[in-house]
Image 1 (cartoon, helix red, strand yellow):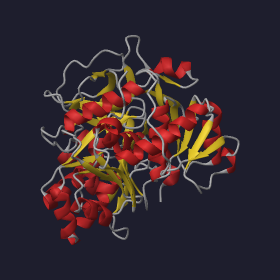
Image 2 (tube, helix red, strand yellow):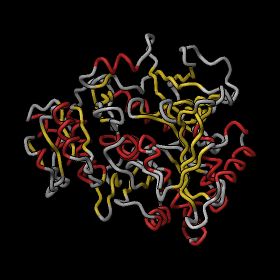
Image 3 (cartoon, rainbow, N blue to C red):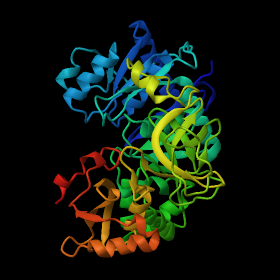
Length: 486
């Protein structure tokens, strides 16, 4: 059994571990506060705790303390509605709720015993009793096809993913990470908070993402930036008028985007202005991280790199057989296997069984192509982004990237809808750069056909004022129907 946070005992105690705005904790301070909280959690006999995961110092202390106590953490999204929170509480049955002092919580949470997290508390580090296979987190999925499911992530998955990323990104204790990501999700909590703590480095949380905040932190010693495509799009938009931002980004060691695909157009704009390439990685709640562009590899726009150390990855046809050739063109569903995987959906043995093959491969539901040299390019979700038109399997992602290269397109999403002749026709949902003069359907179809292939051109174009997105910046394609046409 290995420690998740060796730096709490072996690292320099005076180094800053966490900074949220003007508030910070050194490793010595974090060890003290998290150790005191771990003792309270153990004394209460809790087997599972919920954490009100606001972007605050106390959230990081709460999760660290609970993991030191050996109990599973259920992160709660502060933006969730009462119905969703009620479902999560009923399903996960936490014994305690950890929150920052003074945090106003919804009425639905009042039935759970609350502990206010004291970031200045004094306590000693407990011995870690949990095993590598014991639950560390129960993270609830978005619930697009029913109530959210709780993915049980074991401690070994946290360690395996963070150590594999350290190898891929040459991540060390000398790195200082800046981000403004939410802390109820894998990206901001596991990679963005527990990642620096496992390495013995530092994290600076912006609270709310701004390009000014990014520039300020990179100018004052931060070496890495994590973000989602929405954030990098805002950066790309701001760069032409902000040479200071361009200079700050150019000094960063690593710019990482995740949680959704970063459009190639934004990749190129950022690279042209800063001289730095954004690298992408690919993961899920159930798998943590599967692939990444390596720091010592080629930052190939539009790809998510190669499988991480310890992760097996294959693409399969609809009949479950592996695709015949990794040629950069053949589309298949991604399946993965390795120590990074979750163990089950809480209280859902049926869903757990359906998620895995008989020999232990997890069915991600994502579709991709793979280059001969191993690079993976995601083309979308099997349920919403794999379009079967005229006998072809077409990924929505490459069409979206092509559309975004048109100067008249600000945002783009692509879906399929039934067509009597083609099986499915390609539909482009467009937010025009100039709503008074949007590009015509013919113009966009010709634009895509020239860049990709004629069979990939959109047959229908619908205009919107804005694309529907979730908290992580992903387009909610199930909300795109003919009824949403603006």
